[in-house]
Length: 257
Image (tube, rainbow, N blue to C red; front, side):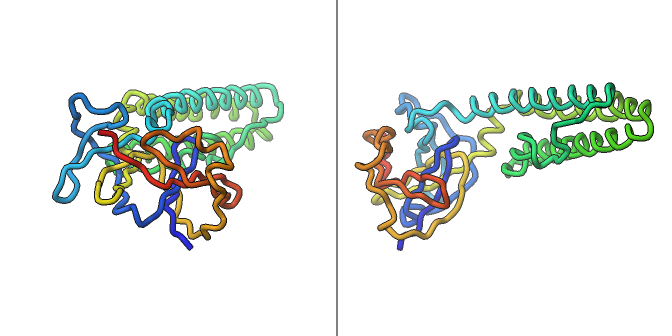
């Protein structure tokens, strides 16, 4: 039996032996290092030493978390523009509304339910966005219910309360887009990794779980395509199917010079 820390970067999942992990902490501002390897984001103080921080996305050739967030926010805005356009059409023409009224079921709601931040400024914006978003969906339900008995009042709800809430919701998303570096830093996690006495940080998107697995359940890396992501600094041991999710198991990560 081995204990693994499971983490994600984008839609990819990886795991490493818990014995190599000293701590998991929130990502933080880093100090730049001149002429450093491209995989290294900078350095930081950790306990009584200064350590380097490795960006795992760069290590496996993924685009930056910042860029992923930017594209996500554009997608979320477009999705809610479509939502309110259909709501207006439904109330104006008496046709069925096919979008969800559950604030937890749309893409924005799913994202809000997944992410949190220890940065107070980001946390405050997340709370505002969450509040406006829930009110938006709730008001949509009120408008549709009102339409059954009073069409004009329903249209008024859509054009006043719902439209104002929609603008506030989109404004909150725009605020995130304007501070993507702060957002990325506050949402990502740092794994403090110990490779045979060499201690450094590894920046990842999300810590998923601690998995207790039998080593016999691992599929050897030579029998899979996971070796495509390997490099001089990343060695994979195999793949684990954990409750339907394929997880790349890391044997070791080496710090670039």
